[in-house]
Length: 134
Image: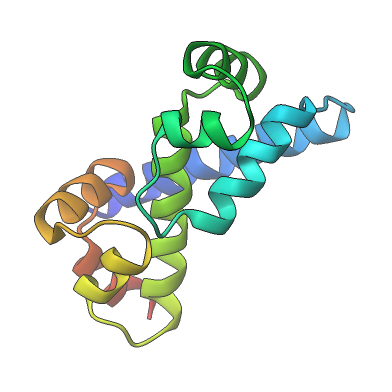
């Protein structure tokens, strides 16, 4: 519904404001977490696991998990999901791609899973989002 969509948008704006406030306050991430973020942003369309990323930054999986959560406020999977869904929203509202193509570009091979996750995060299905924002 429109009310649900407004609620979701408001929630995302609040999250962005919180992130901007954090950035303005001078809060910084450790070098390891910055490297994880960089790696994930470059490889979000591929199959990524915390274990794989931990190997990339030469840290143990448990230590990286704890450090990432402490510094970002999100666990790794939630961060990756938010990034992927954000990129999917950009693709759905910008390019003329099928929902299947968008799902694959952001790292989801299973269209049903992508659609379910997208709706859980945004409150609307990918196809409805595409109609609303094109």
